[in-house]
Amino acid sequence: MVLNITIPVGRKPEPDIKIKEKPQKKRDLLLLKQEEGLKQKVYDDADAKFIPKGSSIKEDSTIVYPDGRVGGKATIGYGHKVLPNEFDTIYKPDVLVSKTDLEKQLEKDYDSKKTNIENILKSRDINLNEIPPNALSILVRNAFWGVSTNFPGYFNNMIQGNYVNAAEHLRYYDPENRQLGPTAIYGNKNLRPRTERSMQEILDLIRQ
Image (cartoon, rainbow, N blue to C red):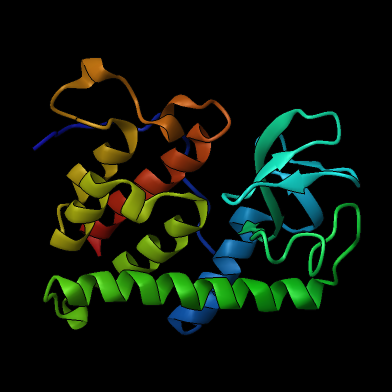
């Protein structure tokens, strides 16, 4: 076990008390809105810039600009990755989408990611009632930005209640062999603040 980890960030502001008092799903949706922010046009998740008309996307949602340049993933709303069958139909480049529709998309995405994680736990014969609600909340919300099942060391330690190790696996792919370097989300200067906030939230589970 890796001990005595230090996260070089200030204390994260406590969520509004009204958020804390809400059922888990409503609370999670509010927290996701705060973390993800709202963009009502399709944008490139690599630089957060809106993409122009004439752009297209690949099967994995990667953007191809009119000049042939390849960008990041096509994204809209509260971090929704635009699917090929949605692009240029439901979500068109440079076309504003209503906040109401994007809130519905957020809820749909949340339900899908939560179900996916629950199915993984069931496939491992893990009783869902044994996973603390706040830990499940973190797993679901982190799935919105490519964490959770994409980081098996983090995921496995989370469901086992090894929160110190879980947090460290967001910082290093192999905490016991740090010379391999930091994870993509910790090594990226734009994603590091979010990674550190998530690490702190995980460590806070120890005191709950």
